[in-house]
Length: 82
Image 1 (tube, one colour):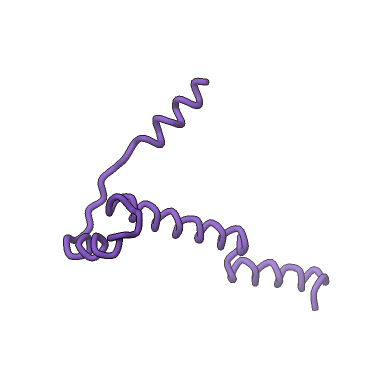
Image 2 (cartoon, helix red, strand yellow):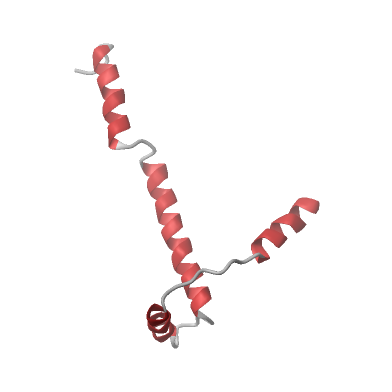
């Protein structure tokens, strides 16, 4: 039960991120009539989507191309690849 309360507290914590005023105004215009209640809620949504995409890419490609080439080279030297 204590863990659940800690999780709830963490979710309710916020920080401030500054963006240029002209960008803020553009976002404000963009979210009109969209259902987003604030620029902050829209920016949070967008950032969550970007982070999720990055995590998905990391799952699909856990190794960098350089790592992959090193592994392939080792496998070649051991005779597992031609």
